[in-house]
Length: 374
Image 1 (cartoon, rainbow, N blue to C red):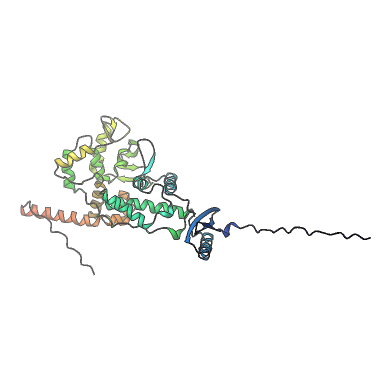
Image 2: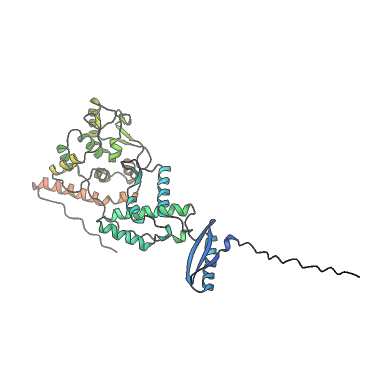
């Protein structure tokens, strides 16, 4: 008798194809479909805002293609991370705009206002409309267009750095709604105003004003000037580590040389400008008091000495390139804006000449004609 052996079939094992990360997936939450896809290895979930599976599927397909082309944000980048990256870039490149709080922390002037408004925002949530809300808030705080534009410019730089590092897609960078540029500052001193101001400045601030007017240097550059930076034989001062990151040598005029030689003869410190033997740090109260005593009330900032130097050089016929090298200006457009001030200075000189010839001190220059737009 032959026994038949019954062979049982082996159970069929279904091989599931492992889902590639680039494929993504659909997720149903309640009645609404969500999608999940990957950007640079990170999972990103997004609501498809639909109850129709096919519509969600099409959105997922588009997102996968965009992610592969680098045209979609991973959704995790936050404002604080962009801000910290901006600060690191400024520190690495030793940019002069970095300031220091009393507690030692570093910051850039226009950024704290952004910190207060955009705290906990994702980069993808910072849209043009959100920036307009920021602008309206700053306007309510009576901040001028220049200050607001400074903050928007910093925000723009943050996004640019992220695009450069391929951490944020270029096509998703929002439009930055800059406001109309404020009118250029007009606080420059004519030679006569400068001479009048000197009569009312304290003796320890007077040399600082003379050299500032003579060189057009920034206040910070002057206050950290040491005698090693001054060559009295050639009549030259060298400003190191300037805002533009470059050293700048400037020849002095006769008044400047005479002033520094007198200071050097009685020097009490390695710093050039001192008060009671100590480096000068703040002289704002003395500056304002001297302005009022000179009849120059208004927004005459010490920084206006830079504009004064630029106007005096251009009025004397010095070419733009040489004048910019002397003052340390890098922005030719800013320097071109001083031409209006040069015309005013020329008209003031003509008015003074006419008054002297006519014996009439009340004569003033005619206002400049408004150019007709073509």
